[in-house]
Length: 335
Image: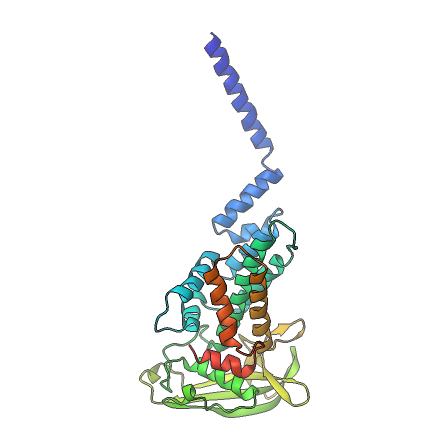
């Protein structure tokens, strides 16, 4: 009889716990659990919609929505440090870490950055937030490089190499536009290995009805007898924009995959805006890489391999410290 009483008491206790659990399904603890499980399962929309998601969870969800996994990103940085091969680091990053980049990709990376920077120093989560921030900002800098080098198909066209320099021609065209913005010509040795990269046309004083700024429209032509020239568009030309900065200077502007009708009556890649102004591509890359390195210095949670790889990106892309257009053009040619 005593055992039966104990058993009935046990069942009563379980019933109370179950009822408490059911009545508590909307509690803070339940919300936290559901949000954590959603993040672990890659249900990023659920995390972003959760009323109890914290800054680290929102930052991670936006990073995931941008198409990146922190684990995969860390692995690629470790690979770059520990597995040197014939491929350059930038080729590894562009081909194995950065996929197709879109306007939405950059927006989610911005959102992720904005979440992580809200965690203040002194918060127990600060160092984790800073390490995550370093990954996000490094990825955004690299993503901008790939974004501005993509063709209309939404990714770099590796099947087109008319000038036979082992680099996609749309990437060569990007380097050329950056050299032009620096007042240089497109005669770097890597550009002229087996052909030429030239400015086929240079249209000044372009404006767009939907955005501010005065622009120069460059049409870059890549020519040669490369073995895979059959994969190139005809004509093998790429449109790039420079935006006026000061009285006579022009800087490369980040542009979208979307086309916009300009004042010359032709379609050009739409300029990307940042705080209501055309996004200076080189300044944006410099800001992201600088922020990434700074965040690493505020964190002690990441591996030294990741730290070394990110620091090396800044050193390779901007050897003098502050990035210049010519620096970024040279860096792309290491692809």
